[in-house]
Structure formats: C-alpha cells, structure tokens
Image (cartoon, rainbow, N blue to C red):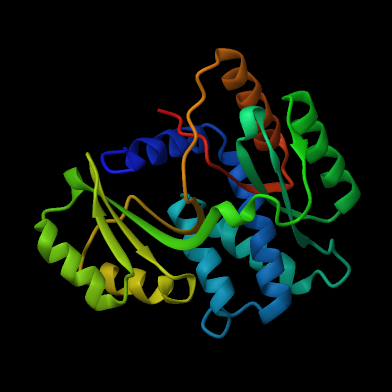
Length: 243
C-alpha cells in the first residue's frame, strides 16, 4: 500500500470520533471498570489501568471523569460485569469485518451486531472466518507536518526502540511493532519527543479491497454506521480501501 494515505483514514476516524465523544467516553469508562476490577484502582500497580487512563487523556476525557470512573469501579462490587466478545463476518463483495465488543449483556450485543450486518446486506460468520486476513500489530502514525526529525533518523530511533517495521507514506510515517513491544516502543518515542497522531494496538489488513459499486459502498457504510451506534461495540476493523 505504498503511497496509501493511512493518516487520511486516521484523521477521518478521529473527526468522526470527535463528533461522538459521548460514545468514546462510554467505551473508555467500561474499559476503566474492567481494568479496576481485574487489577485494582492504583495505576502504578495496574498496568492495564494505566494504559486505559493514557487512552482516556488522549481522547480529552476530563481528569475528574476519569477519577470518578475509577472510584466507582473500585467500590462497585455489585455492578455490571463486562466481558469482551469478538464477532467476524462479511460485508458486501466479501469485505472482511471484525467487531470487538465489551458488554454486560452478550445476547443484546449479539442481536445488535447481527442486525447491523443483515441490514447492510452482510452476514456474521464463524470465529476465525476473517481474522486470518489481518495481523495484530502495534501501529504508530507520525504526521509529517508535526515531526521535525529526518526520516532516516526517525526510522533508526523507532527500530532501536524495538519496532518491527517503518514506512513512509504521502503525509505520514508508519511504525509497526509486535503487540508485546508496543508500549515499550511508544514510551521510547515519547521520551524522544516524537509527536504521535495515533498510537494503538490494532488489526491491520494484509490486503485492502476496493468497492466499485456505489450500492455496495452504501450498504457497507450502513453496517459500519449501525455498529458505530452501539455502545457495546468497542472497535471495528475492515479491509475496505476507503480511498
């Protein structure tokens, strides 16, 4: 995908997220609750909670909202029990879709996910039916306009920190890591003062698919919009080349 503008897709995603901060805060709030219940309320001793707090701050969640969420989860012994579930399926023209959810009602979530696929002309498949088409990677995007470092110097800094791969796109640099090394690489880049437009562990398609039919594009957009409307849906990955 040389020359493919990953940063354009990132910006598009963030603009959409900025227009729906309520959902983002709901998603992160649930992740805080799970992290606290699993490892306690002290981020110094709970790495998972520390990671969620970093994500919350990146999403501009107010500190008092974060603190309230931690306190509520720490004292909420009889509260909702959230669990992670992943669904896989196909959109129009065989577009591969993975849906990560975090829910306190698996039956409700399963029904919502299936309805989204059905209404958009797709279908939910069996576990593993499309995930083999993706690689789980840490992905760090550096906006060229925000980074003063020379490309070669940035590459060496990233590789020395433990990154697997480095590539230059039209408007950004992409740094890939294995999931286990992601936090270490991210921390090293932060300490080097390198600005990051996006940094997350994600599912990256091995190949992208272009849709030529406007009807297929509309149907896929319907699936994605319906999934996005569900508070139970955390992340959606697909191999549609939106450009």
